[in-house]
Length: 277
Image (cartoon, rainbow, N blue to C red; front, side, top):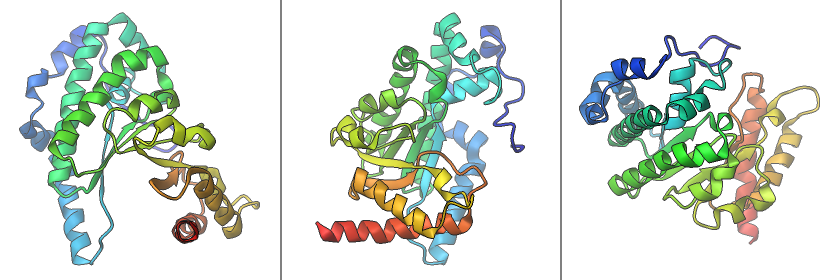
């Protein structure tokens, strides 16, 4: 992906006729399809786990997939920077075809994430990266049923594998997501920490939502400021049932020293807070 232009998908789907011609039926979304088309990812998981074992590393390996709405958004729009209205336009102009595509994507995601677990992934994250590009009504009608089906099926197959979900830019969905069977709901930087726990109601843990701008060395940030803001995160969200993480991805301008300081601070400050209880 070239820097500054976002994700680009060549030859996006033009219309329902193009969809029918290019996208297989949902019945084709099998483990064999994953092996044929995404086998390089599964092989990578296996190689990573082998390398970790050889080096005595015990950290959990997180499997990953984008979620159905996000994939539809890119498949019909072709870009994360342009044509941002096309995804919702597809939902409203072609609801039946949109559901067919979402059904196909839901099924392949289930098989793809299952294959990652079978290859050694210890936990899974489902990432609705383009949640900010869909309104709440359409999210509930089109995206939420897919997220529910994925959670239900993956937890039935792998009940002991933690399952995380992140609806980026669509925090209105977090309460409903916490009721679908996911173990962790990831929160972005827009979420008010003072209400985050009440929103998920004890049904799930939380992941997030540290501001990555705190890790950019602009002259005002330091190891000390990172430690202070990391402790603030832990105090506001609580150190238990929390995956302390960023509310957005790293953008490339962050200082490696400050990123390392964040990791160290989380480990040390969370241990201190837990012991103090």
